[in-house]
Length: 541
Image 1: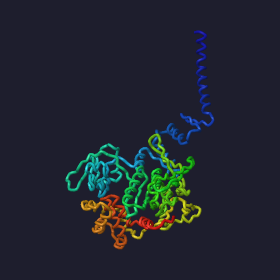
Image 2 (image 1 turned 90 degrees about the horizontal axis):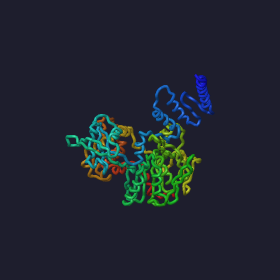
Image 3 (image 1 turned 135 degrees about the vertical axis):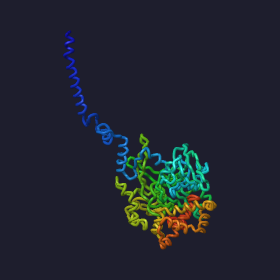
Image 4 (image 1 turned 180 degrees about the horizontal axis):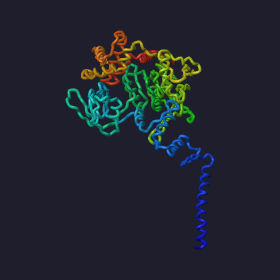
């Protein structure tokens, strides 16, 4: 053996030893860098987000296998719920359904239905929709969907919706039971685009006053609204009542486009401001079609967000009267941020302010959404629904409109004319009939049994005139008794005007939809009647 070979035999173990030793020192050097931490297989640096760090540790080190995605879906909502009450995480599986209401359309078969006696009955067929084109009629019973029986199995409204809705262009088989037809009728329906209307109704209250009810501010609302206004003007409308009661808001840009119809050029509609959001003002452009139309806006405790922006702009610019009760007080601006997996975060980024500088948002404690939403109950228990809110006596919350009228902040919009809830006709019997849906169920039954006669009447006035000649109230009482409901004669007498009017409104809705329902229901609506009365007076500005 040569000297070279001997040297190799001697040096190789030394080289391997040096490599091992140097590896240990290199590792010690890396893991001793300032701020670096080490688990068995993971290096953690201080710039890492703590939540990401914990999730990575669980993924790499936890004793059992864990689906990190499932864990994230549970963790993120808990993080967001510790912010304000309106920031929310929307999982990918829910995002489409959540957006549908604001996008203004969905894929479906084009029917309105009601479940009664465990049977799905078609109440109305949407004009131009897939079902109307195939000949499905009001009064038809849906017995099967895709050969699966849905009648008599305790199906819910949500179950029916999920079975009938779907991607546009897809097919669904519906089996119908029709009166005087022995066999089921099968329809293969191709789902089409079904519009979600947000202007519930527009009609003339009298020769000069038009009424428009907006349910929410969705993608199509502006177009629906200006169309409704144009139709009312053709009928002689000179004064407008815009009903935003129970309107929880929606799309911000739609709200200010509608507000713009009533304001003059340069008038401030609202402004927003947040920590990372500089003050942003939105002003009218002066091309609105109703700048000189007399206006009253109706609000209540469930009018929120975009509804409050509209009402606040009208009030602060002395453009019209606000009638009703204090609004909800939702003045936080959300930005919907899409996330890579198809989910989204609706994050509050600013606050809304009315032209006078009032912050619409009512007070809240971060992370306490339950107490926040109980505020409505607290208002009721403290008597705010029946007497003007004491918040209007707080001078520190005093602001001034364009003409110098006093308005109040503190959360929500305070009406110019407060109208208390009218419980004069309310009794336990009435509440029981509402809760048990007896009024609604009998109205549906009556409309179904008298459909041939009722379809002769195409407007609320003629429908009501006919129903006033029929013993529909007595029929309701018999129906309620057949459902084992106890009828107190004194309470029945007291609540009769309310129950009778509501019954006839529901019957009309089952035949001519909201164009029949709201005009009849409005006869017992004390807020609406007060607004009509105020229209005849000179406004205080």
